[in-house]
Length: 165
View 1 (cartoon, rainbow, N blue to C red):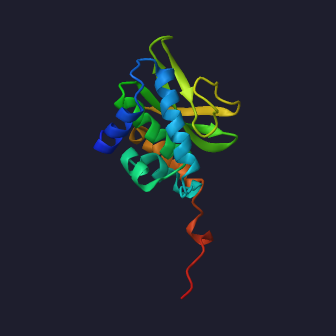
View 2 (tube, helix red, strand yellow):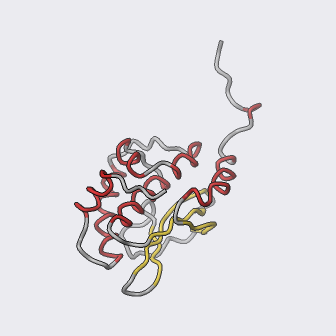
View 3 (cartoon, rainbow, N blue to C red):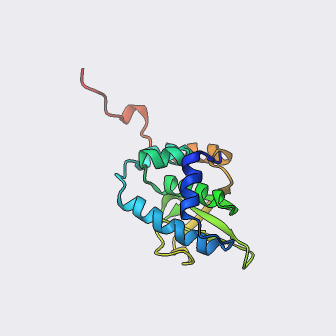
């Protein structure tokens, strides 16, 4: 689900660098997202992996939700609002489920991977340990894979803490 909400459109316009070069657009968005991450409350934990991928960018922005999935979703929406082609990537990093994006670079005719949570600046190569499991235009395309990944973080009913009565 691509988020074309007015809040995303307005933010993308304010961050726009008036360029068709993906690396320049990504640099502008990277600065905003880094500030967003630093000011976030880190409310999204591995137990909400599915929610972190499926939450629309406008809600991520409004609720200040910070995780690899929400930041990837927000960045993708901003880049798409500026006219850039973007792929969402679900994979692993250092053995844990992780999300990042790839943006099409029209100058070099290639996909540029970028991980806001693990990269210092746009154009950096992904750090060793990233393993791509799936890519998509929208997280809903790989929902079944995400549901399976979520199960790794959800204990069986017999192991859940029961509320006191």
